[in-house]
Length: 249
Image (spheres, rainbow, N blue to C red):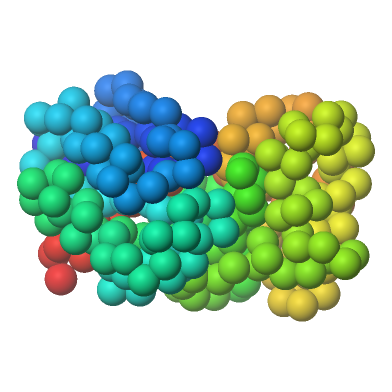
């Protein structure tokens, strides 16, 4: 069994796991380190190198799910990370940290790819929108299973503020919102996105998906809403899948 290393850089922690890309699942336990304050380039490189060293069983390319618009390995935005990432060659940094080929992909896109391949979106047609609720709100858009990369709907204006400034998981924590009050805000975000795109399905992921039973029934939309199946492993699995497919041409 060939294993590919997938890494997911989040607001509070960087997670990594050995992924069986054929099955689309993590083999063994996830490992993590704290995300360096501000996620500066130098400190992030050190953290990535330390994680890679924990997975000697993984050969070949390393995939990184990263909170930025990513094109050809270059990161172009930095909403919740150090602004030094704007225009940075993140793939080269990952390659240097790993000692082998590094492949970087937008974090929500990675989670979405995993869910569409082996999770809640498997075999779904039409327009599917994956939303990850964490430090911000990430989005991944699929039309008949095909990814439209680097959407940034978390920055769309909803009721006069960016969506992620109203309804991210971080905002829920900072403003001490209970699940009911937070769900009202999420429903406004879903309504706004539905008005723009008319998706057939919303997949709700990110850290909050681990607590779906506490709020899922309160979410409302004209589209179907389901929780992410892979939950906290989606970004890791998606990063590994993307790296393996990129390397194979």
